Amino acid sequence: MDKKIKSVDIRNEIPARDIERYYAKAMDFSASARRLIQSLLAAGFEVKRKPDNSFVTSADLRVEEFLRELIRKTFPNHGVIGEEYPASNPEAAFQWIMDPIDGTEDFIQRLPTFGSILALHYRGEPIVGIIDHPVLNLRVSAAFGLGAYHNDERIQLVDLEPSAIDGSERLVIPARANFIKYSDDGHLFDTLVRMHPNHRIFRTCFAHTCTAIGATDATIDYGTAIWDVAANRILVEEAGGKFSMIRTWDVPSFGRVFASIMGKPILVNQLMKYFPEH
Image 1 (tube, rainbow, N blue to C red):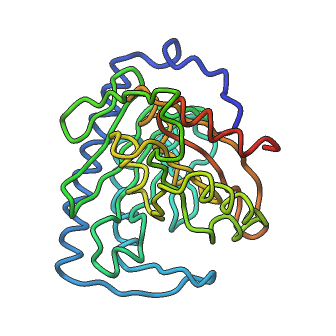
Image 2 (cartoon, rainbow, N blue to C red; image 1 turned 90 degrees about the vertical axis):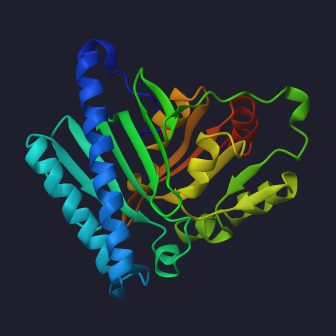
């Protein structure tokens, strides 16, 4: 997920039948996680605070444990990176990256915009990506060379006309807090909302899902972890859109954080102009 695209040639290094197999397994994993999340919502869960004061629930922990065990049994030589537990097998070429419940605050409040993110990367390149919203019965998924899907329907994004870039386009940005949490970039947020007044502010993967299916035109992420964005590039590129990693940086006591733009190519190119120093 580095800003510079790696030189991995997925077509030559991974047979198409293997990509199909990984995608099928990832879809099975996601479906199993959805059922578990639905059962945990019905049964109830505990809520705690992490050292950084963010929320974590017993459901976050249970779902990640469950997915890790499925992956370990199915692909014992693969690595796993998740939000709630340390990475396993970090030197492996294949890495499963997950956020078991993205939008824990929404989950706690029973807001349906929370989701579960699962991706598979090969030497840093995404080959499978899934975002699932259990309450909404909404899933977006993609695999390298296989296309992107909204539930079972193929997604094909239609780019904007250049004349449509006039401030009325549907841009999703995170809250201003994202721009100042790990860096002093509040001025970027101020510029974006001034120049694009028809924006929405979502702080969960629901923003990514909306852009992947074309319900919004582009999404900007800022100051997020790898598990928050791991599925985005493959989802939007397989749908015919554009993904750009505009910045990565390291935060002491946290790790690497990312800033990216995804969506319809003309708008992504326009938005990249706000980040020339990156």
